[in-house]
Image 1 (tube, rainbow, N blue to C red):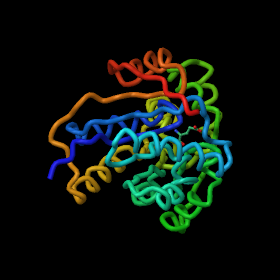
Image 2: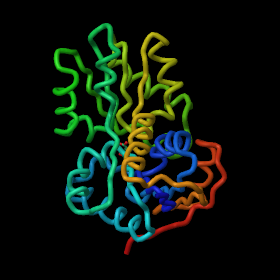
Image 3: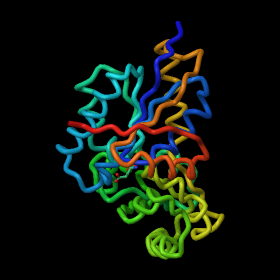
Image 4: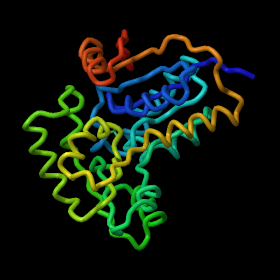
Length: 261
Ligand code: DGL
């Protein structure tokens, strides 16, 4: 049976587009509703209770728009709210977390890095992931909230950003694998690679999430056979969003402003 309803993807901003791109690459026939909650960015620093309220509102909005599956394209929202959202809503929900298991598989030096938001790095969820999949390894679990605002304004390589990055990446001396634990960070992959050097393998979670989306759609017999228009919503400024997204992923779009009342 075909199911042509869209997949709903959300993030606090443009970071989830790194996941969006992987999903559209692997499942080009799926229609998508992308929701950027830019009025509430950053999610890192918000209380668990606030994040539960915020993400519940988004899930309700997506359900009203008849999505068949939801992707939380934000590590911070996933580690703090996915269990809550799954207990509250019946729709299938897929989250994104750093690929600690893969990083542990690839390391030869026995030292890996994870670069997340501050909230994700100190979450119990992330600590449990490390215990479970990187036991016996040295893990530099570093959180920062200094990078997201650059990406939100489309700045992927200014001198100011480069200086910040160099400072943050000092924490990763000796690693040979780095897992990007924030969906915004793959936009900085080239800059990070230049600073860390080619001998460090940089992994993000996008491809794994896209494979999981496809698996879940397949096993629930929810694959689409016909793509309709992808729709973009932001709780922020749609003109700014349009400009930045078109720069970041080279797409043409017509975002709609959505306000929670
Ligand atoms: N994109 C979000 C993540 O993956 C972080 C941005 C924020 O703090 O809102 O964690």
